Image (cartoon, rainbow, N blue to C red):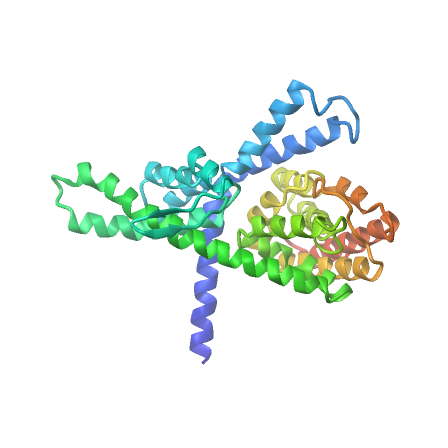
Length: 360
């Protein structure tokens, strides 16, 4: 039994290590557009009111920032090619096909598609990270297989086409449905947690890092929209606001240890910009103590917000300014702020005092 557990632990560690190796090269993009989002929030009408949300400058910079995350399947596929030793440009194509404008249009219209009589999952792959990594990992074995069976004189002609033809059903008919299934289960879990009261809020806030790591942000949003349809969200939106700010506090504690400017930028991007990926994937995921501090801080903050019945009445940024969405009947922005302070202080102190000699 011990050997089995050790093997499972080794597999998980290797999977996480490979995932981090695939994501880390994309951090300049994540941090760049994350800091751009922070700058737009500060310059926008919510803070300094230098830029109007309807101004061309604000609009252009906003869609540029959004592009940094929307096309993440392409960036991570290109990066994963280096980790799994596959062709970089075929890998980039594999990521790009998930975002094909025609496919996106057909999905939005609810069109049922199939390939080789296999049903294609109608899902949105924008902002996804894990799907691309899994896809390129599988592609590495497909390429090795084709190299073995194709003669050298015909390989340059047939190899690229066969890789594409094989990967299309794998991506759209296997990986896609798996993501849809996991997303559906997550929505059901969130709705069950909603019925548990304060404990449900605490658990929700504690597991958001793993929802992000699992690439299930789309399901997170679907559940949020479902809850918002009633006019009030008692569990999910503010849990995301808490999570991002606690993540910022945890990352800030690590910055005070390593003095790495990238760590500080990631902390600001998470807390102010509401964009967690640079801090989570680039920093906290590498450190089990920091990840545990994040989850415990989230649990405590979520528990307090649940006890005090903090709710959200609108959708906004997941950053610090998202706290204003808690103003409404039966909810208190004061208790929302206290919950945030509890989580941030707990996460910061646990991280700081468990990392006396952090060197990055």
